[in-house]
Amino acid sequence: MTRSIQVIIAVIILSLAGVSQIEAQDDPPTVTVIHPGAEALLSDLEYVTKLAGDLGQEQWKNIDELMREQFLLGIDTNQPIRVDILLDPGAVRYRPNFPIADRKDFETNLDLFGITVRRSGRDFYTLGEAFEGFMRYVQDYASIAEQKGDIPAGMPGPKAAIVKLLEKNYD
Image (tube, rainbow, N blue to C red; front, top):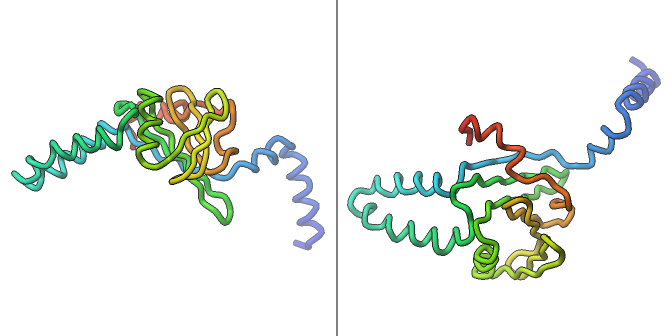
């Protein structure tokens, strides 16, 4: 096939595709990883820890307490956790979405990890120090990203797109 015929075919295909489909390509391809939630993760961790016998049994209480009081403060442990991996050419970005039980506790948790939280809008925050980025509360989730455009106003709730997978008990 000659080069001119290839160009003509490409122009026809692009004309038929419509402008809205071309504009949709501005969003990077995304891989979404979900986990049923922190309670399921803790259950798996407990199982593995207790495989160590008596020592594991003794340590589990400390591990459980540490996880709940230091890593899961403010997080709804019974809701799924979602992480979007944005595959931009030349850069991979992450957008974790944490289910929130208590916003104040969650922000305190971020502060304990050295992340400052400054309100920049109704449900929008700028994060600084240990992590430079942005956070938006969307339906009972905190969505966090390095780039402001990765968590736009009006974005759908993180749980909406994964409900069908969760109903099938997929991880």
